Amino acid sequence: MTLLDGKAVSAEIRSELARRSGEFAARYGRRPSLAVLLIGNDPASEIYTRNKIKGCEEAGIRSLSYRLPGDTPQQDVLELIRALAGDDGVDGILVQLPLPAHLDAARLLCEIPPEKDVDGFSSQNMGALALGKEGIAACTPRGVMELLSRYKISADGKHAVVIGRSNTVGRPMALLLLNANATVTVCHSHTRDLKEECLRADILIAAVGKPKFVTADMVKEGAVVVDVGMDRDERGKLCGDVDFENVKDKVSYITPVPGGVGPMTVAMLLENTLQAAERRMR
Image (tube, rainbow, N blue to C red; front, side, top):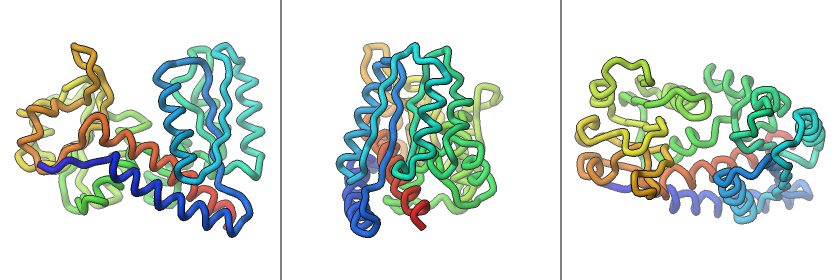
């Protein structure tokens, strides 16, 4: 069993990005920039936002942080996004999810121009991904693909199973794997024989949001297992969707939690921001 070390790989990527950001600044007279909107005081969102801003600093990307009260009206948020959309000095816009209940996330995200949608959640970018065309891919699925690539794990011709069909992870994950020539099965709450489907997987992606949901009897010998989950077990300890201790000796590669997919998500946000800046300047 080999650990897919997202923490180490993301550090390599940030170093590469810092060099490229420096070249960008030398050529265009400014650094790539990312605007991050945090609305309310959700503790997890606070941590995620802080990690993203720290990542920007390490990668030579200018971060613009906008912290808004949890009761900020929808119209005020729309106006801020529109102002950032029209600002030539801003290359990427990120609205940290989840949002307070009174805000319409879909409506707000629609205001982000696709070329500045560094989360890859817009219908235009999702559509481009579905058609196999150039666009901005969602950070977590892209991070999974980059992690596999850095360990020279090819999806070509493999049977990949994705557990979960969310718009942020499951669906774009399946599309990226399909674009990489994998045969893809997407499983969800209505899948009739989940265990049987998972046992067919050469590459198993768990993105269901349930602690230790994937057990050893659901995993084929020698499979590659990628755990996208970030959960808490019955003792409050951080864990993933995969029962790591009982699965690790059965597989060829597996991601740890923490230190697997999480750091790769931030790294791909930074990569998306730099690429967005480069495309805009071209």
